[in-house]
Image (cartoon, rainbow, N blue to C red; front, side, top):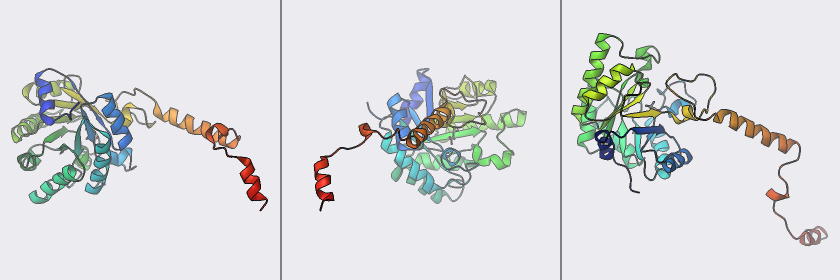
Length: 278
Ligand code: KIV
């Protein structure tokens, strides 16, 4: 099968085909997601938390994004690869923004970039699209602005916020974005925006009426215990399985049960005793 393109994703909305999206940050996870047949892999800057151990996405750099996108690109043969532009890599000088987007394509192997924001970054979206690089928008709770929002809270509850979100979505479509992520907004508002747009909406914590859904792979596989976001569903508890498996391995090493000769290499012992006798 050939590579899924941004225009194929737009067509999925016309065919009322739902669009599942998952994050991946490295070769093995990208390979598995690709084998499962996921249409889009997002190399999200959520990697700051999920694989680098930061508290937010703010510290993620362009070099981090290029490095992880490159690993994902080696594993994903069919899925469309979308790479996040990290904090302050856009919304700065136009030429710098273009150069940063281009790095994710040229060095990382992405086929699309994602930027957080609407009206405030509309020139960047237009310029990147004009330069031939497909753009996915991202509105609602945009994690790079967590300090402005004062936390990871549902957006679009007041009249002012609702009007701005609708305006942002329409402007992104007009600027040439081929899809828009909507994060943490009430389901009826997400439904309304989805109906207004001809490009697909991809929800995360935005209810069931979006054209697609995106989830952080570590969340749906249950990589971490502790806080589980309301918008996610654990399909597996990998956390328990991994800890249990590592404990079994430790116990067997300590008890001398691993390795056995099954996991070892034999030899002709005569050669050994000959060399010992020298
Ligand atoms: O970085 C990310 O994983 C994202 C998704 C949460 C949409 O932007």
